[in-house]
Length: 194
Image (spheres, rainbow, N blue to C red):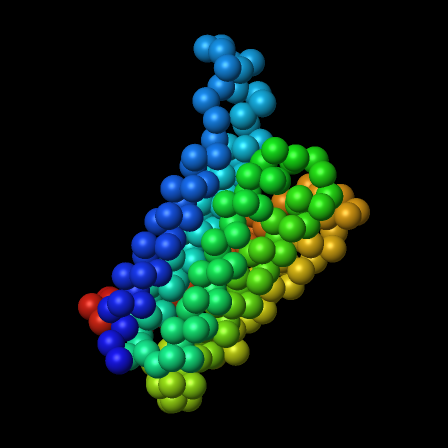
């Protein structure tokens, strides 16, 4: 079957996720800089989550662009990814409201770790459907970047109980690492200058 409905549905869900996240930011009570202090952790957690969700959306788009069609396995794998991404607003709000607490910081990283695992499962489902010689399979290769991301998130989850700032630094590092669309996939897209 075609991939258009899957892409449209995913785009819609991700748009709702971002909308829910921004609604968690409350208007400051006051008109001076001091009024912004209580809102700052919530805003910063929103910015990081927005960037990470945007990275997922961007890479999801590029990955599906290399797929010709989808099957039921791919659709379920995609729903699995969307499940974990749909938990981002809640974990973002919790860590934003409790920025110096271990458990919210760990859960925040766990949600992104599981979204990363779900993304790999989706990627593997697409490769399995299109074959090991497909453009996506060749682009992904051994996926060192994906493995490094999973290790950083898993480390962040554990280290949240030791020092939450290390965890946040690891989560930011993963976002920085993926901020530019994955060149392994982007260079294989039609109309991409090689």
